[in-house]
Length: 202
Image: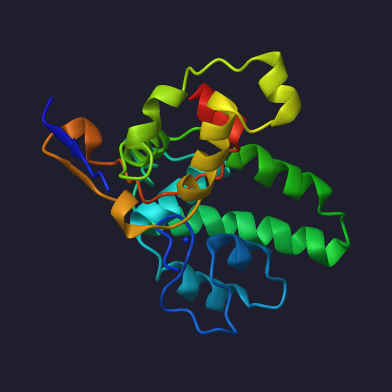
């Protein structure tokens, strides 16, 4: 397999909008929850995001993407339509004064789902200049005495330190060079905010 991973969110491939002014929402989530923004303006803003960013957001919200047939919406216009459908639901809830707790819960659940991008990004961070020398710490066993004196020993310390660069936009961690079709839709720049424990399980 000829896959080359870089070694070593600003403009997040998953959620940030580089063209937004400081007064405008800068993430897809901001657009969906912004009760003050008219629907047509929100739709125009969504079209400024890349197709990969929009598709990732659709997966996070578990929106139904149809890849084949008459209902095929596996394209940028389709992703925008799905997200606008979601925004209308949120707008209706806000109009009715419905508590947004379930919405936040759904958002949190979506954010914990693994996507096709997660493993590639994890490997990019794993073999970066910062963490490659520390790979041996992944399975490092910590004694009870060490844990009592410092809870950030061994494997736990590795994944705690690992979490910060994994969830932070760094251009050196967004690269993927491969001719294999299996990787054409993988975007290591897509940041899914897993916690340290989830990254360890991955």
